Image (tube, rainbow, N blue to C red; front, side, top):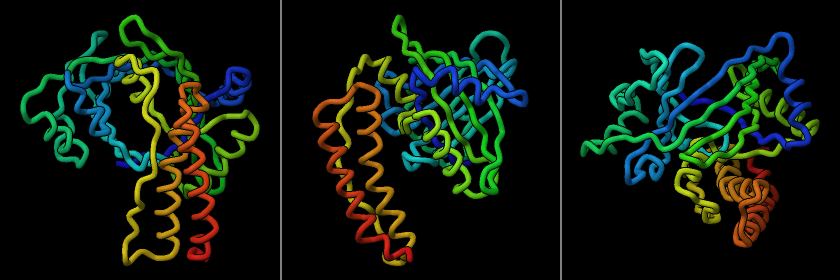
Length: 273
């Protein structure tokens, strides 16, 4: 299954306003406590996979996520797991038979054991909203990520498409961005947790990569491919700048990506009519 969602960081000055806006009378609240695992050589992170066990209220769920397009869509597979108050054992075989699960099993074929790298403790407020013919779930997460004695705060909001056109999700997110000054963060909790566990204050800037345009793609498909390629450079660098962990190279690559994005919009937009 692919989940389609947009995630934004909440500026501290807007935290209370966002909490009020999501926490209406129809909203529901749940505590989410999760542990994320990888091998000693961090091969899951290198492959863009995130494996977690999360306690959702009174039940446990093991979830495996892939990298996806790095913007809105990520492959995901969830399996309920029996357990009580203590963390159940991780078992990669629970995801067998799915594309992302078979990739995980191939990575662990040599028997490399999994170990917990970091944990999250989140209070989530959920609310369903209708927008442009779509049903969108708002999830406001507040809590922290912990790796050993290190801890980083979490205050972010996700807009996940449950039904209908993705344009409804985008329109709703745009209104909330304008109202609350949210900023789009393509970094996942698993990426932030991995960095915390590894003691990484900074990560390399993202450089441009060729866009794989197919011979049989239609005009709109070509434009979408080129836009995705440009945004794949722009957004990670912008997130590092907004998050306060950027280097001069992040700023330089952001500028390069923005010039590339403008060129795509100017030269390729006519392809989509």
